[in-house]
Length: 254
Image (tube, rainbow, N blue to C red; front, side, top):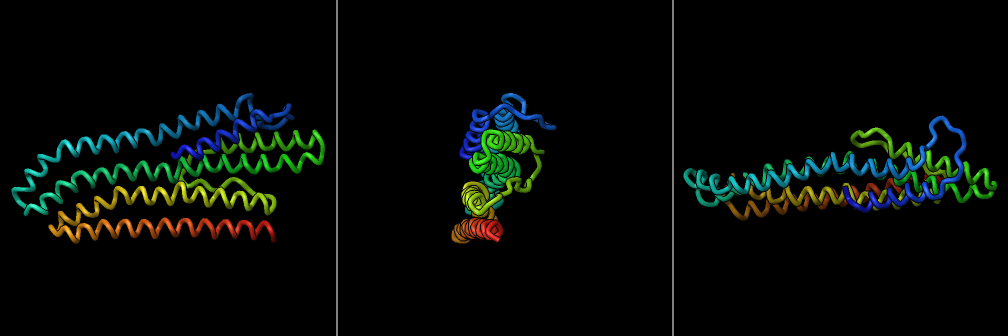
């Protein structure tokens, strides 16, 4: 996953831990150091999901490149030179694209949204502390404890694909802040991952087309079409995020 959300989530968790006041009795109190240890444990968990897939992608590149001379020699016997080169290139780009997409999908559907959930829950919790100060120390302490408990629960939420958003804004300001975070995360994660996917799919599309037709111009066009489609998809993701943010703010104002 991208470092930015890891750091942001860590800042929120650490801030709540430092700001923690004497806890009140709750059904599931946050254990001492629970926010920080949960955050650190999550980083290990996220790495256990992403790192093997990244290593598999790297291994796929090395293995297919090593096999490329033999693939080229065999293709050269039965194909014209352009198609032989396409077949050889596709023998590298095809498996690499598949392996890379596994890592990208895991990051975009499991790791990033779960980390984002914890960050947003922590942000909302911290934003609730300020208004609670009007009620004096007991109200402030209760708001801090609620923020700690909610963030702890988000940090320890089940690891599932495409988890639903957990943070709930309570006023237009919180809705606006969450909207900004959501738009930023849309740029940093699904939109970026779409572009990243195109970075491995475009060479593969070009190689597959060259292998099929032997036409370099058509191969370049196939790669360019993949990039164009990815840009359009990324633009749609960002546009949808902006629309959703505006809807969230409108709902909070209604």
